[in-house]
Image (cartoon, rainbow, N blue to C red; front, side, top):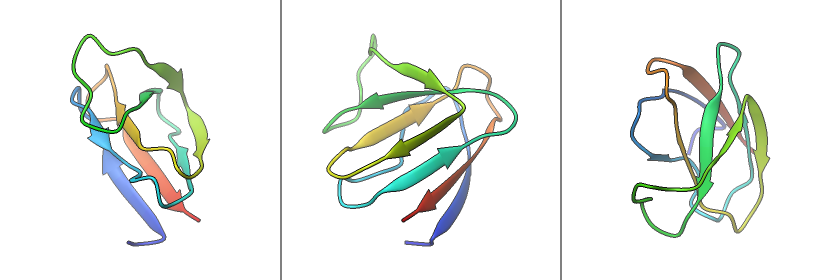
Length: 77
């Protein structure tokens, strides 16, 4: 896995951690929704909204946005 990864968010849940890595997740142009789930989230899904967040093991995190096109930078540690 690359130490830093940029992704473009959509309205669909995208997995960003698998439970074996720590990660710093940041965006400068909006906010993103995060949920913690072992498997792909099914709507309706509870979530939290952030512009920056640190994820630690063993968390499996999924993200999406309500404004498609938001850029997210993930720094794996």
